[in-house]
Image (tube, one colour):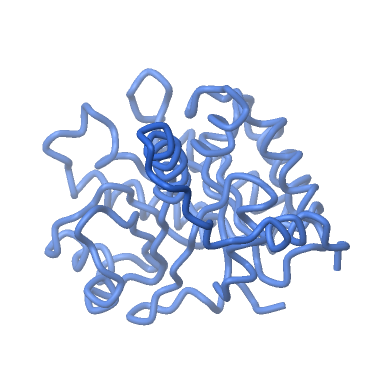
Length: 262
């Protein structure tokens, strides 16, 4: 299997589509992507749970275990802020995910109440994970641009937090919602770790590549697109539109989940 770390190349970024269940993960792998991630929103919402509230741990672990041995490409897992607990508990979770086949994790510093975890406390979590599972790629997410209260976002704080997380052992830095070219260029230039950007409406892979981005995540975009497509199709049928043949046949969809683990 390809080394996940080696896929993070500034200027030639890893495009990381995010899956929410076994079928979506296997379909994306079969489509030829170099690696895939999970989306915490998709995993949680598919189980009837809210995202970002530390309620999707069991569902996330179940999904990773279900994919063990079935993916020919690396898998990285969104664990929100660690699903609660202190450094030891989060390190336990990270180790369990690694043993189940995960090549990496995302861990964020945003809290359910809309505030940010203290940098030192977040660094302690990251250090505990790396001490327990050194081979796991830890993508440290900072929500300085993501949270509603981060307006206008403070790039200086973003850099300070990112550097603290890298010093604690983070392998990559994820800054969701950063969009300005100048800010992205500053982050890619000044950070000693590959930068991960969330693909926002209007963004393109070639443009982000030119800014030096090393990883581009789709986040919950694909999950939301799938929901929208399902509702749109159902409404069209209800309105009397002739049913169209789905792009994926029944047999193809069934074969994905029925395939024996590798």
